[in-house]
Length: 183
Image (cartoon, rainbow, N blue to C red; front, side, top):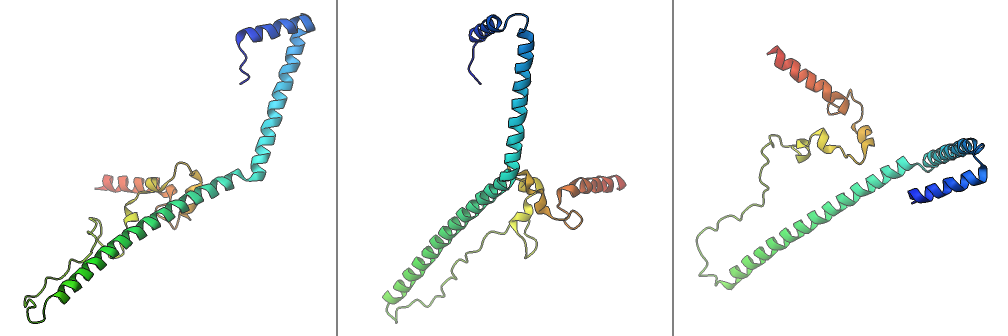
């Protein structure tokens, strides 16, 4: 902290012994130690009071929320970019198809039926059993928890109304183990 080596500390002790004297040195050391501990307590108290007044927890929450909002905005931009690219590709292929149709004379048009264009469907998720399926349903409570922001527990709401509430997890595990034992 102060970057004081052994020899500097030894020099301070010798000077203190010469200045204060051997009779009063133990009392001077005790007094200095009391002052030092009192100063540390005062500084710690002031720090805690300052943190309470400034609202360090609120600031921490706001920073966390801002980080999440940035991530959401980045995801939105990425999705828009992907959709725009897909839209551009579809428009190009349609434009190309229209140009091909215009370039062929009316009499020489193919009588064959054209194959329907590929539909741009997303592959079905293995767990997608319902129409209202959301991929977030696959995430467990542990995956949703942010270790940098432990105050997120209030986000789960009332434990009696929310089965995914962290307080209900041990209850669910107990129920499952009890059901296994009953079988």
